[in-house]
Image (cartoon, rainbow, N blue to C red; front, side):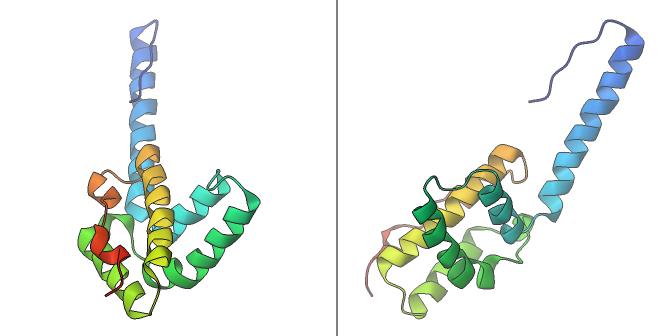
Length: 136
């Protein structure tokens, strides 16, 4: 939520223009951002805590996330795309634990995108269900 106060009508008009510009800037990020961009920014602004975890995540991101989801714009990413991605990971022979790890990485980055205002759909944060985390 954006707020502000002004002491005069002129200052209030200036404040409104500034707030509108901030909202439009956020909307621009939301419309242009790809999953790869979000993951890159998430890692740059925090991401996982420990260095060992960051290295493990980097491998998952490079091998399993970016090749399939990296170029997908957030505005086009939905539950169906995520379900297809889980299926492709399973078809590659990834273990249920590895699929869960990849899901955790993407979910954390998408949750950050929602907090940043880059994505508005909480469906992006859905839980895929246990079927993807079991052996076929």
